[in-house]
Image (cartoon, rainbow over all chains, first blue to last red; front, top):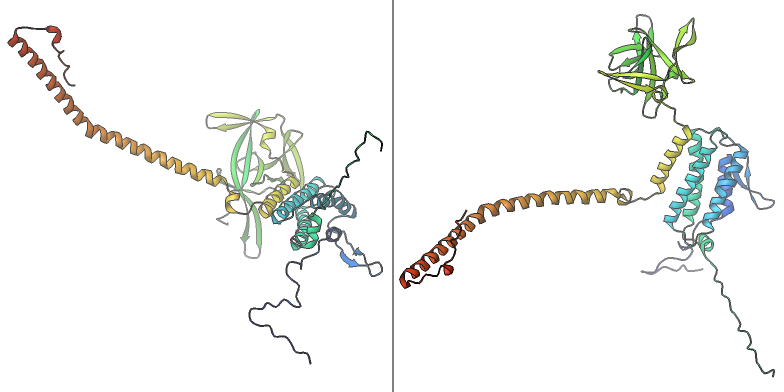
Amino acid sequence: MEEEEIPQEGEEITRGRIPAETARWLFDYSLVMKQIEASLSGGELVVDPKYGTVKIQNPSYTLLSKEAVKELMGSCIRPFVIGNIQGASNIDLERLDKWCFLLKMAVAKFLAENWVRYNLTKGKASMIVNMVVNIFEANLSKSLGGKSLDLVAGTERVSIIKSEPKKKRWWPL
Amino acid sequence: MNPFSRWNIDVYILRNYGNTIGLFKDKGRYVRRVIQREHSNKEVEELHLKKMKRIVPCPPLKYFVDTGKGKQLLLFQLDHHTFYPVISADGKLYYVTEEGGREKKKLLFEGNYVVEKKGDKEEVIPVPQLIAQRTYEPVEWLTDQAQEAVWMYGRKSFWERHPWLISAMSMAVFAVFVIYSYQYFQQMVITSSTQVAPQLRAASELNYNASLMLYKATLLNCQITGKCNMSALPEIPPPPH
């Protein structure tokens, strides 16, 4: 018979639990992109059992057409996410707010420019903008202070060691 | 009739005065009323005009133009009680009539200017300035989105959202300080003029008496000694004010 250890007074129970600092959402570029694309195209994300990759299943394209989704992702959202997050060295709540603001405005401008081409209405357009920004904000705010974002924001130390050149001797010996 | 309905329609009434077109600005509201009868009810759409105090049958809603704040309607008045909706095409004004269940547009005026009477004065208004332009939908939506984004992700604390309040409050405090200090200064001048002036007057009188005494004493000295040096005599002081 194994006897259970009874915690004494003043002793914190930490066994069998993950500390709060490490329990963070794992931030992944490709997954965020896939999530946004799936929600825009009206499908759902599924893990392919054969290859273990994530793919979009049953897209309906009711909000936007296939070309529109491609254009939005390729020309607006993907460059924004990659260009902003990869270049950042420190990610905190203030910066997240600023990014959300910028992403919202970028998507809104893009939709306003292509208003007639995509057959948009006010309700449709605001729904699209909210979807994109909410997914982006949720993924980032969950993973704030975690290891994955630290890795993204961290920089490698590069040290160069120069060996001194040999002194020329005027006397060849 | 709903008493809380607002006069949200800008009605521009055009009248034909021979060669010119007159303009009369009015406010209106759209009212939908049910007339009860013995066997059936009848719905009536009316347009109430505020200044003219008149009720006319409402023209179709497609002639109303959204301006953002409210709606605009152009009407052509032919008679006391007959109004026709007006549309503009190619910079000219047309009025629309119904003949045999069909809409027909007729030319109202070829010119580009309309005369508005304000009492004795007359004002000339160009026609494109009259007609409200429909706002472009995505632009409106984009401004809304920007406002929303600022509210969601912008500065959150009260003093960061309204920084102008600090300067306004300091200006108000400074203004109050200036007003009160001016009042205090004015009071100081009055008290000084009432309290210090009599003392000054008394002092000047005393000075005058003393100098007179000195003058008399020197004269007496001259009489006693018999030597009179006029240059030694002090001048007669000026009398106090």
